Length: 316
Image (cartoon, rainbow, N blue to C red; front, side):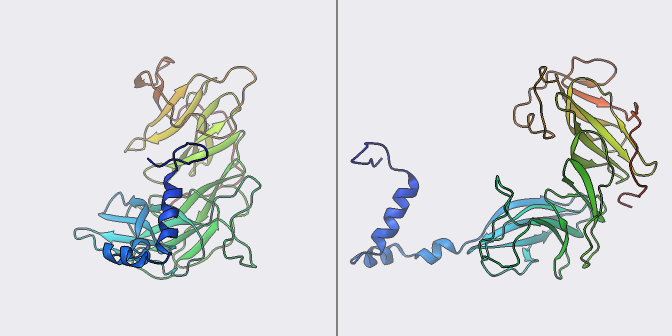
């Protein structure tokens, strides 16, 4: 490995790659490049996927591809899975694409366009667009057509039927309609309001209920929003930290991870932030009053009486 003469430390891959590029521009370097049979343009041309998602009920996949500085959404349908580009953003304006999702029937795709805000809340504007920049949820039909903006937000959770999308903002859960080809106004208020910092929403298989995590500083609950009632209830609430809800296929039970609550005086503001990547479940069992298991299955039984502000039907 090459080292720096001044410090004796190994030179990083980025420095070595830069040295190769500079050397290629020097006189006498052209024959060496041509002998290799490729150019810098050849190296930068191939596209590569950066995210992928699949439909639950049909053989359809979708992904975000990066090619020559541009980012676009692609899809493919079985059995041959021929790639089809859906978006047509062919100018390199530096707008990031992330968080791609596909409806269960494969008819609707949603994704986020725009960069993650920095520590000061600014969103990157690489092209210095005088209109500014934003991070927003977009949608497009898998059959083609123009994409449309759904709402300002990120990490969209698409309903099973593809008609609604959930996202988190200001510690509450919001909902926006995904009307094919129609840009809608921003939602005026959250889908429901509950105490704590709420996030990590998960649709039930029938799209009529939403499981979520409600962080109460040193502990957290698994909440269930029932759109038909409508009301909010909590699964076996305690002084522990409950996280990562997951519905059973029939929608009658919810599995979640349970860990001891934080020490006195410690706080946790973001749902799931202190749990992901370092969970060590000790046991798996049904929630029947046994607090020893790190993972539990619970029925939406105990209610704490938090009422939503408005009545609405979710996802269908």
